[in-house]
Image 1 (tube, each protein chain N blue to C red):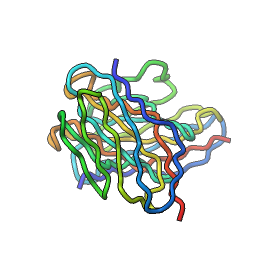
Image 2: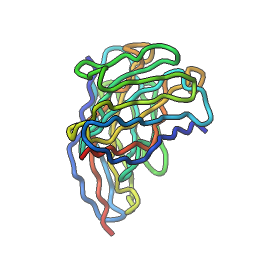
Image 3: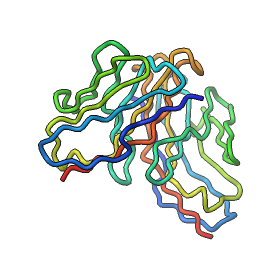
Image 4: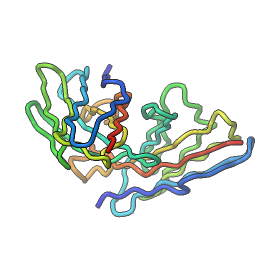
Amino acid sequence: GAVVSQHPSWVICKSGTSVKIECRSLDFQATTMFWYRQFPKQSLMLMATSNEGSKATYEQGVEKDKFLINHASLTLSTLTVTSAHPEDSSFYICSARDALLAGGYEQYFGPGTRLTVT
Amino acid sequence: GNSVTQMEGPVTLSEEAFLTINCTYTATGYPSLFWYVQYPGEGLQLLLKATKADDKGSNKGFEATYRKETTSFHLEKGSVQVSDSAVYFCALIRIKAAGNKLTFGGGTRVLVKP
């Protein structure tokens, strides 16, 4: 149980285009989802937290107009990288939490999406 | 604020060797502590956790004990395998505080050679 999927697993796009990454909780309701960014050989950096049906809360330094997050349902959150540039190339990982599972605080991670902007 | 410090890698071992990865933390209150593992090209998997002082988390031969007196949560495995090659992240969360966000250490890359 508690499986989180991401799609696509990897994507290559041209500079200036937008890319959408989906994060789905497959067997539980994700009341909260988190989006992380990971640079090569580095730790995870939290980008934003989203609760279903409300606006995402972005971490300091993360451009909310560039990284659009939508958490429209209890099983789906999307991250859209708008007007992507090569410096946006990274590994993006989502996680999800169900308030009713395991005390409500444990996060379940997706497999990640590797974005390359050329 | 909360922080997690873990030993830098890479750690290179031979198969069947003993593995220790040190992790110390700074947090107010009583955090829950986690070890996550990331295999190449994949997301994070929860390896083990401990929610209160003196708890021992264990899984797949790995163990870690929540030591409040030393604010540590060192990961150990008595006999590693090549398949244990991965990046290991120590993390903490303070329940019902700061949005229940995970605070990660920098990660330790482990390479086990046959």
